[in-house]
Length: 299
Image (cartoon, rainbow, N blue to C red; front, top):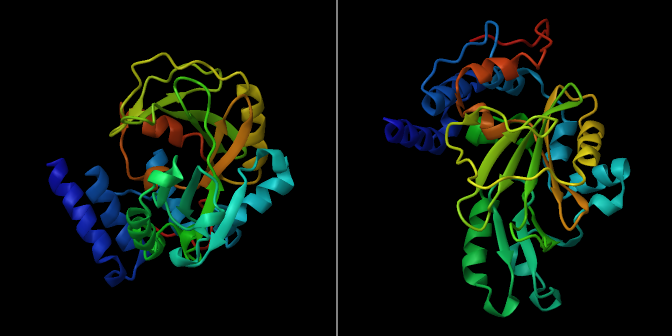
C-alpha cells in the first residue's frame, strides 16, 4: 500500500504545475504521503500546522534564508564569519566551473533545492561526468512546485562549491537539526552514520533520546553522545530562529567547531508521519499559529 501511495506522490509531482490551486495541491500531496486527510479547521498536529504555514506564512525574506549562497551573508552578520563554511565559487552553469583551481576535496551543491549535492574526496578520481548530470538535473528542478513551499518560489538556480569539511571523529560528520518554535529550540534531530544508511534520532534540549521517530527514519544502534558544544549550539539556534514562528536550524560540530548548515521551514515538507502518532499532536502544541490571519485558508 505504501508503494502505491509513494508512486502516486511521484506522479503528482510530475504533473504539479497542472494544479494551480496551492491548497488543493497541498491537500492531495499530504494525503498521498501520509494516507490522511488534511484538516486545517483548525490545524492541530505539527504536520497540519506546517501545511497551514505553507498557505499563510508567506514572507519574501524567507527566500533569502533558503538560498544556500545568500543565507551565508545573512548568518555571518548575525553570528560571525567563523561559523560559515567557506565558499570556493558560485556559477550559473556547470561548464563555468574552473576545475584546475579547485582543491583536492570539495563539495558541489545547488543553491535552490535539496539533494543536489556531489562530494569530491579525491579530485583525480572524481567522476565529473556523473556530477554534471546530477547537478544539471537539479538545476532544472523548480523546487517550489514539489510541495508548494513558498520560500523556494523564485530562487535563481545556481551552483555553489564549498570547502570539504571532515570531522576527525570515527563516526564522521554529524548533522544537528534544531526544531525551533517561536525562537526557542525544542528538539534536535541528529543525523549520524552518513557513510552508510543515515540514521535519524530525536533528542530533547537536555539531550535525552526522545520516545518517537518519523515513519521512514532509521534509528542509530550506537550510543549518540552529547556534543561538547551542545549548549553553544542551542544558543546559536535560538539567535538564528528569532522572530520566526517555526524553522529548523541545521548546524555541524566539526572538530570542536560549530558551522551553520541551512534553514529549513518545512521538515520533510510536513509529509511524514510520527511514530507513535500522538507526538505529531504534542509537537504541534508547541506552535501557536496566528489563526486570525486575513489570508487564512481552510480546506
